[in-house]
Image (tube, rainbow, N blue to C red; front, side, top):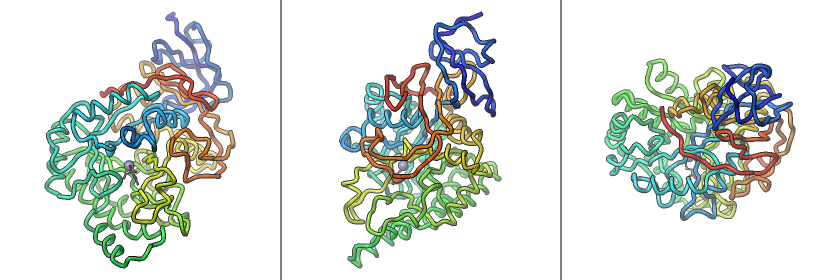
Length: 443
Ligand code: NCD
Ligand code: ZN
């Protein structure tokens, strides 16, 4: 029988859609066998997973890593450490960096930084502008990011004609387009009217300026363009009932549309705005309880394909400015999996469904090779969780450089305790212990 480098034993593993008691044999960073202990190959070492549940490595398809001129907020070291601590083994990084990633050259340079610093595996999106269509054909990206509404950074595509040509290009390049769908014209109109009044508005105004209709209209336009061009689109951070209705209909029509929801749109609502602080300002904004329950309903019905963090590390000092200057975005790498596990413990959804949402489906949508499943031939990316561990979320214990969390003080059950990437333990007992991230490959 073949010999393994090591066997993972004693835990319950998520295999072919269910939790089973079995071991995993690993050689050269790959899973070579999944079997009951007695049938595993002999191995030099054993990784003891007694009492733990082992999921396929979690994949977060929406991460703002920053770095370059924004290292004070986050860089590839701190973001990837935060990911590993959150049980995440692969991140797909967004291009609204400073400077932005809008050329094949900038993309390569950014990946060089990732290669040097990241402890988790990674891919990087290229950002679409109204003038860089030719750059989007590069094979070096994990996809194309298209912002229909202005947000942090300066990537924005307002003209429908430009959007159409970007989608056409994506088809030729064989890339998925991730769409930030909020209608710029509606947002801008309201923003300027409010600014004219001159008064400092309360934090909750953000949910009025960028209202559900602005999101629905943009999603509807994106879907229409996808239908016309046959482009594969992925709607980022869906947060409203209206968007979900558009997406359900598109899926029924057989269009190439997938979508994600963020933990903050599942676990926070407008009710959480603090009267004074702009901490919770995020794009798209927090929504009504009714929209939150629509998101949960769609998640449970399988309309939502994945959960992604939209980890946007802004330091509190920046967040504490007035409404006009406070940047939008919330950190989330270290809280996504714990919040989802807590929901499993509260019987809100099954663990198998969580694995689909954060492991299997992300790999499928972005065609990541050998990722997203515990299966022979796949990378030995494993997220070990203590499903019953109760703990209190505290931002000052996190590895993200921004040092805070919108879920401060929440008590949750379920904690990632060990993270393995291609056979190497990267995070264990609260510390990052090694790891060398590698760029993802595509199927
Ligand atoms: C993101 C950021 O800060 O980079 N902010 C946010 O509110 N989500 C940008 C984005 O994804 O819109
Ligand atoms: Zn984002």
